[in-house]
Length: 131
Length: 126
Image (cartoon, rainbow over all chains, first blue to last red; front, top):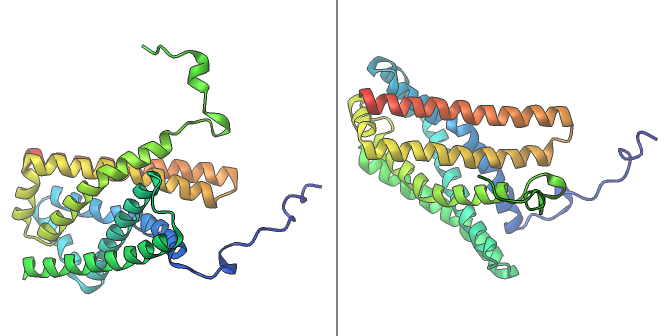
């Protein structure tokens, strides 16, 4: 009797549905949120480095300039933009707007295009400022 | 002083044992995160990888220090609430769930304590 609940059939889940824009953006919203969560470790590392004096700062800040670190930072900034635009879509839904099928699909695609454009723009500005 | 009647305090709390606080705090911090994270991005663009003296002098500015502290607080409250939902959605073993929910809170508090101390130290001594 103990296993009755466990052996009950499960309702179909992700793998059975065709991925559509709204669904993919919803999943990405959660994944980028989790990524930003762990990304705070980078913020801590940088702030603690600044607070620990010049020698410690210099021994850590060069890492942020290496190619792998720049790739991580690029991904981190994209995650932040994507989650922010996704959040703005959520504000709209909270107010009771934007539930029409074709509009929400367009907006989901717009979310992806917007986050990529903003990220590329940010890094163009970074390069103009730094070099 | 709390003027609410015992019935008023529990009305609407249901089986979840809390009301709309989680949803509401998530939205309030989402709203505050929009300008704060835009500021954070501009700051990162300007100062990540900058020489030590430049980074310190930027964070010594009272306005920058306070806004940076708000970035940390608003961001951490938001991410703790978000991670709580993720854990509740995917972890079904009660003991593991309880442990992860605690770890989630501890992580947010440790990150917050380190960031705020660093910001204040730079602001007061830099």
